[in-house]
Image 1: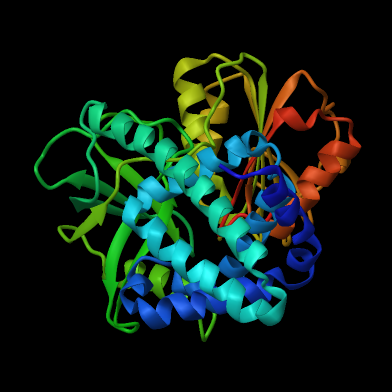
Image 2: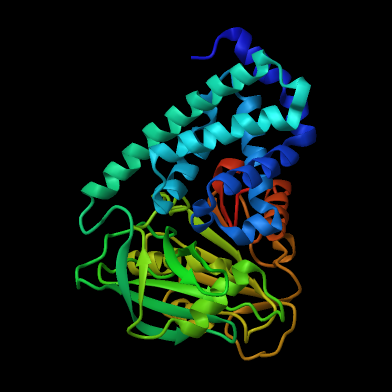
Length: 399
């Protein structure tokens, strides 16, 4: 356990982490991959190249340091990270590897400023956090192992159907190769898909939201194809899945994980998504349409109606229920025949007419970082209680 002197030492490093945390984590990842190149098959190398994982880790280390006197306040973050780690099948032994290279990186980056007291304090602090994480993740692994039809690690699934949802997004329906049923996941959760990418010479793992309400028989993931001439490594993987994953092909999946799920309140649900961010919300919308336990305001932003996935499905659900209201924001209004309420431009909640957003509602947001920042800011300006705002950020968490 950390002594009070060690806690004070950790707190004293906070200004250094604010100033140079990304430099530290960048050095750490380079060191880690130099000594353990096999871990490139575990980490998202697209986010590595973009610097997103380095930033996310720097913010996590800073958050831990700032709250070192009471790490219990970080349990929601620990839970979210734990779900990601169990989805990736992270093992306790890997914490030891990471800890070693993190402490060595502190020595190398800080140089003479890394006094023995600082190094020792951070070694104890890391081990304390690692034990918290390992204990929490053991509980999550135990839940997976005990849940009906669930499994640990990865399981082979077969593509049973491939459906084009828009000009950019395709859904893949996946069933267990052993013909077993799938677990009753919570709407909003994701699976990790592991696949070998020849262009990278690596096995890569990506999380994909389950985009339909659970039915016990299959999973559906919906993947956006990157249309840029030179896609990022993340784009290469999405494009490989689009172009090479056909009916009858196999992939490896982890059991469902994730904390971005529907709560059990009967309050009106406001779903706000941008682009491919609608996928976990589709599962939530279908679940509510089946149970009819609350009203829904569906708000989605896309470049135009051609790139919007599930447009017909959403309109079908709206036409069959008086409790679902659909609002779309398009950069370009190409089709005026849609049954939804249309606005031109980016999603802008304050500009929506005929809807009063208040604290009688729960808000579920999903999309890229800049999209989420705007929606969260607008909701707070509208007086919405932050405890009623739930969001899923695509990529490493930075919000």
